[in-house]
Image 1 (cartoon, helix red, strand yellow):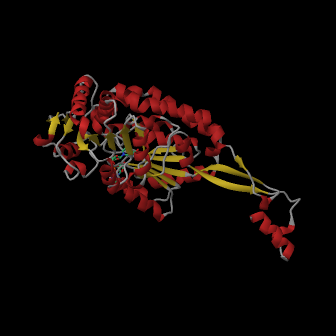
Image 2 (tube, rainbow, N blue to C red; image 1 turned 90 degrees about the vertical axis):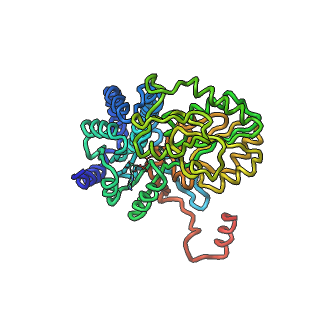
Image 3 (cartoon, rainbow, N blue to C red; image 1 turned 180 degrees about the vertical axis):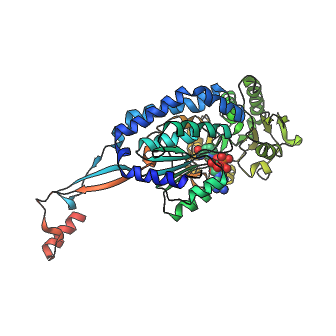
Length: 455
Ligand code: NAD
């Protein structure tokens, strides 16, 4: 960390040489990253298992596979996305050509979260490199083994002036944020997002903030109860609920409440959550374990509730008999605890959701188009699904990001490229064939023609 100012300077100098603007150079970095990830899969899996018992299969499905796919996507599309795009020119500018030219931002800082430590650091880095930037990556210190392996692999294989990882926690990130970057990309909590945004504002640096929030799942009485429960259980307890877009809580129509609870229970049992069979992960640290444990009071436990401090283990837990005033409903849960609340008046719960911060995700389970559209039209949220959870994140054609307190900006697929690019608007004119209309002296005739043009 001592030499971070020197590294930023090196990146700035290197960026000025225009090497990163070459498509061949960008592709070379992406291919190298893919090779590094492939060749070191074993160490990467071991590090994440050490951090919070996340298994190889789950890491592959939720992180590595996406990274490989995204690298392939960028390799295929980077030339096309970098090309200038012609747009029509309006009559007043005749004769001229107009086009939009993507250019890299420059030196980018990417700050990652710990919960999907490979995906949330390397995915934006792939987009940034593909868009022709240099990158300084700060993985989360909370997942210390993954942070160490990311830093080791990047710093051993990439020149620091192109791509460098700097490890550290709050002091190191605070120091980094005092420097000037051309783009900051942050994934984490809304409270730290505000600190990052403030630091970015001091240098007028554009910032993308990928934050969290309380994402509801709304279950209508006309749903398929069994499939709904199955999909909510999977989305909630994946990564032991430590997923930014996990359904935070469920609102179920009162007429199907008990049947739905039974179905949730059935799938929690069926999915057989335990570290030993690679179907579950630990709570990341003692602080979060203690924070989560406080939410579990016997009187509210419908199912689960067992905890083990030494193993930092919390069984998938369903809480009932509570309302919006309960402490578990006051903050993002980010753990394997699922409050299930009843509703009978849709407008009432829409108002309730709207009175809080805008969620990162929202999930609607209903066969009725009318109900689906009502939720989509009336509630503002980052993104979501109809009749499933989480999987919208896996479609690179959907921009991924929050709104309001759940984030600013988005990425994934082409959107990642856009996020790390500036789009220059260019109009190109020949020296010949210019109508004299805009030049003085202004005559009545010119005025008449101009009025016609602007009509
Ligand atoms: P966090 O905000 O505590 O930490 C994120 C990063 O910020 C880490 O790299 C950390 O070192 C750094 N940081 C922490 N405190 C800081 C400070 N005072 N000054 C400067 N930097 C600081 O978040 P977390 O615990 O890693 O992740 C959990 C949160 O992230 C949840 O709210 C979750 O919903 C959200 N999240 C969002 C997404 C998304 O894509 N939208 C993805 C994962 C997690």
